Length: 323
Image (cartoon, rainbow, N blue to C red):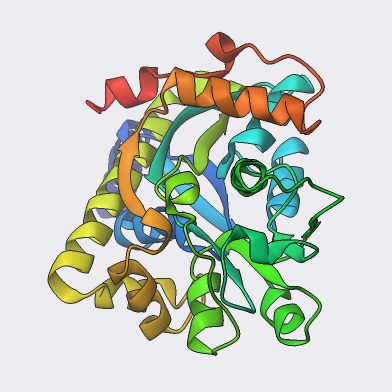
């Protein structure tokens, strides 16, 4: 009887374990791409702080070195979620990719710095490095230069540069100015290679930057995973702002070191100084702001096809989590 009892107990324990496993919710893999820029901080902070507590999403993050590479990964289905420049999101939607814009986690954060002190007019005839020609930076730069009556291609030129090579390129004199997400402007200032261009704040500071974009099929199939991740991003925004206010961004500087790999003191300096009007908070971009970027993208020939904002923009995930 003893062997039979042992076998029976073993079977019962196996059934209990199987039932417990079946009762546990299955976490859905959520592949997130990010870049080495302070605009991407909420992603790495949310991942570092919350990934072990998620019950609906199994977040996996991958680093890329340019918006072009990040966009390409999204287009081929290698990632499900990213924070991308608005014109890039428009371009994907215009090309028929089923994506949804579900919010944003910051405004501002990019600055125009140049090798020599001066205002916009000092950039006449200069070569300016951008993170991409289909980025918010290109649109905002165009507005700034247009206000100074400087025409692209004729009185100034732009070139796309990658984050991994930009500082060496600037140091080597291959570029005259940079308009990039922080902390690259701060890094150039610390190394005494550049200074901020005068009188740029009205057109460049605190503007809508990158936005959250998720594959439409993923959002439809796994709304709980998306909602949970958005909650983590919102929590990450609060963590960063609290850390800036209370500890001079020291904790954030430590966390990002494993992902963005910037010197902690550089990050603290940029965040404490609110470089480029950088502020972290979850938000849904205003329709009029998106419409203006859409109009500018068409004028700059960044976009040659129409985009249906009503289909692209989905405010429901933020509403579901109370934001």
